[in-house]
Image (cartoon, rainbow, N blue to C red; front, side, top):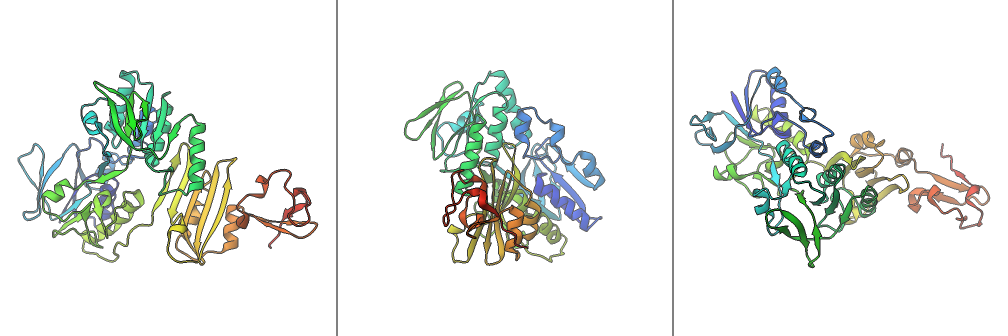
Amino acid sequence: MKVVIIGNNVAGTFTAQNIRSLNDKVEIEIYTQEKYPYYTRVKLPELISEKVTIDDLIVFNEEWYKGKQINLYLGKKVNKIDPNSKLIQIEGSDSPISYDKLILALGSTPNIPPIRNATQMKEEKKGVFTLRSIDDALEIKEFIRKKDVNKAIIIGGGLLGLELANQIKDCNLDTTVVEFFPRLLPRQLDEECALMLKEEIENRGIRVILDAVTEEILGNGVVTGIRLKGKHKLETDIVLIQAGIRPTIDIAKEANIQTNKGINVNEFLETSEKDVYAVGDCIEYKNQIWGIIPACMEQSKIIAASVLNLKKIDYKGTTPKNTLKIVGLELTSMGIIDPTKEEGGGWEILKKADKKNCCYQKLVLKGSKLKGAILFGDNKAMSYVYNKMEEDVDREELKKLLELYSYVCNKCGSEYDEVKMGILFKDLPPDWTCPNCKCSKKEFKIKNNS
């Protein structure tokens, strides 16, 4: 059997690896328009600031593919799929490629909001860029060097946008982040943690403008600035747009494969066409698109089994999980982070906010089940959270994990519970007194629950 995969991104490459681990005889071919074997996109901003090289980004080199007996074809853009004849067509080639099973790991492209002149100035290379590939990073780096860029604006305060801003700042540029939403990372952080992150970013010399709609890119021969809604203008020498992604679906749509925002798949990641599957950023399942690495990894296992007719598990969606560094600080965000938006009661929050050390830890429970977490600036609890998500947990164990304590007044026995009060005992003002007997903080000791 011959399996053809279009795309060598995380979804495509790990699908190939999982197929090979289940079957050492099936023929596997990967076709990609990329010039490089599978590499991590997370560190692309560091390529601009020259903290990493291209070789540092490569996760699996060409020898890895050979060792797995996976045939990788670089620089091969697929421009047509024919599900009826089971053929794909490579741009510039007269000879179609046949397959028994086809997997579409088409990935996604950067989303460009409806900003006047944005698309045109990007296509004409006048100082507007998106960052999605190694070539994009090299192009941005070259533009900054050649055009003697001093000011940069990043449109989009998401995970990649903020890391891009951090690296652009390290190129000694005056850097501004313009974010459409009223807070940073609204899908990953609650309001309190988002404010803490904003302050930390601004402490590093990066300007942050929230709740801002960019209406127009200004400039003629080259970018000179942007205009925000309300006529406010900002000067800049380069504009970097990091405003989310759009699933790549064009060749699937042209082949009459069912699509909506993404390529529609069922619980086994099968498309509407027989023997054609889809995985990763390009898919839509139950009206949802994920666009995160954990989803790609989870889907790659399911699709490998489906292709080999070993259907044992079906896809149920992926709990949102993000673990990475933002401006050098560790961040893990998982599951439900704001229970006020959820239906029903029974929610409880354990939270530790240490603004002085820029650490924020929040665990969300429903009943005794762990349903979500934010770990920012301190990831000691990450392993526990990953292992216990959606499982029953012990509240006292969680308090120890977050180092949240109850303090007892030696004089009157009054108790100060950091979980209930929401403020760490050490962060109380020096002149704080016991609400019951008015004695000083010095009279309080940690309660021993053993």
